[in-house]
Length: 199
Image (cartoon, rainbow, N blue to C red):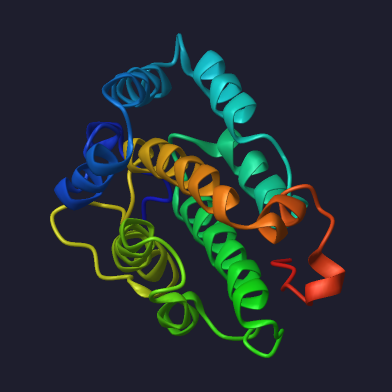
């Protein structure tokens, strides 16, 4: 059984993930993501592409971004865990916002799909919609969808690159509305808010 994403699939991307990226990212960011995806697929430029992704992503908060950072070395072959950790990151940011907006930590053990509705009308509608799409198109499939149709692996390396760009844009937008997310991204609130450690 093949254990890596085949070369022929490196540059495939789900049209819905691409559409989400186009809604959220600038044309320059889309172009950069395309170029990084191509460079990641080539052996001659792979190391530089991995280095560029690591520089973009950073390694805080340690849980789960440091784990995603380490998974970059496995691209373009292994993809699911990196995608899943991007989802864990968005999930944890939403937990911070729920804690802040509702002044309680009682929802910290609930998944993103259950927590997000608690923020309806409490965060900008466009941001709410984007997180909802991210959850349905990226995070839930990374955790639960093992049915693969017309390809060998559920996620391609290009989808990983675009997911990193999407996640970092979400981080930027969520940080704008939450001081607690800003603190979490600096590793200052994990213990205080009981946020899960994705070990």
